[in-house]
Image 1 (cartoon, rainbow, N blue to C red):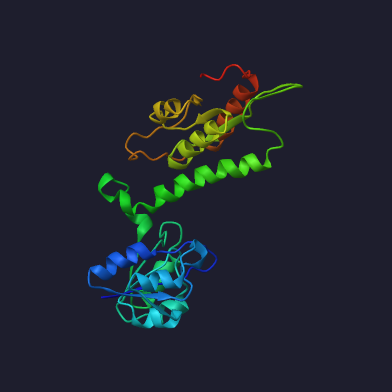
Image 2: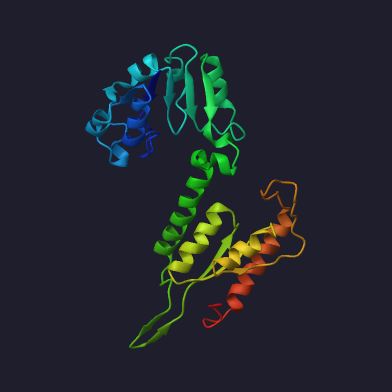
Length: 255
């Protein structure tokens, strides 16, 4: 099988790195890589070649590959350049937009969307949603810290003590839990809200306070996912959490 790796447009990531390329080659596959596909992720073309891959043009990846990959879907015009009945793996997010999958169907190729893989233990290595959500939660706190005109941790100086920042996390899923952990590591006082009561234990295990809001809808049949809340509850939850944070004192850290 010929496996093709495309260079992302507007994204520094790459679908396959040289180590995975070597594994694919060892399994008797031919791997063709678009020029500079890994440059944004600091993987040089020479590393792919050392792993057994071949560096080719974008058009050749599309025309020759039996299976090709990208993190973000390519446009319909490029899909039509792909080999007939080729297999295309990407993150199509069909529930958010059906356009990309429809374009794949129009081009006569089979689309596999990584974001549709069930989030279960056996499929963890392919769980792109959880891995990206975890990174997003971490990065969100760093971005927030860079915009906050004060420190996150409590600092004691010759002029006195600066109390720690107060951080409110809305949503304690994968991204939220990583955000809590990151904010705590930076020394902030953290509170979190989630409509799922099951998240309370996880929030507290990370050293944060769980904000309880009366009237939140918690659907136990939703497979662990949060369900949509009414707009009024969202406003009440935000106001209640903000009020709690204002009432908190620097010594009330729960440590």
